[in-house]
Amino acid sequence: MDATAKKLALRKLTYGLYVLTVRKNDNVAAGTVTWLSQASFEPPLIMVGVKASSGIHSLIERVGAFAINILAEGQKNIAAAFFRPSQIENDRINGYAFEPGPKTNAPLLLDAPAWLEARVVETVKRGDHTIYVAEIVEAGVRNPEAKPLELSDTGWSYGG
Ligand SMILES: Cc1cc2nc3c(=O)[nH]c(=O)nc-3n(C[C@H](O)[C@H](O)[C@H](O)COP(=O)(O)O)c2cc1C
Image (cartoon, rainbow, N blue to C red; front, side, top):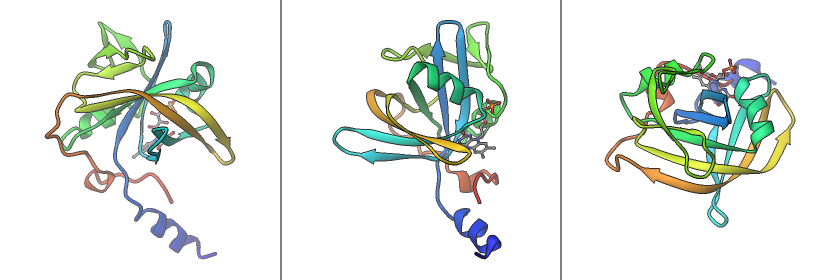
């Protein structure tokens, strides 16, 4: 295989930016992810690739549910705040206000224009990322007009 072509072709896939959050009592984890897609209309499923060595991975393994905060154009700063380990301080997670998800208790960022809560129904462990297939159990929209933030607009890459 041509390794350079493989890398460049994979980097032409299109992605959004999302803050994935998980919570179990005092344990909270959050991280910016890109490898996410809808996977079924009925039941409503999403799939997300989560780095096996990450904090969000170990907490999803324990909780079996998570929330996806969908970021809008202009919210690159929020994405950047969740590349590092997450903590709750003064009722904010990594500096951002949130409320608990009604079904999963996972933090929902008040600035995010839309969110989903999902429960894991299938886990695929193959490479360095685990694929979680999860059923959407709740959803909310705070700003219907928002245009989603796209990876190609950020100058960052994750893939290849
Ligand atoms: C542009 C970009 C995209 C990323 N996409 C993903 C992703 O799809 N899945 C993932 O598990 N981690 C992804 N990461 C890494 C996570 O953001 C990071 O592992 C997460 O913040 C968890 O932190 P931890 O590894 O310290 O627990 C991405 C990082 C960057 C810079």
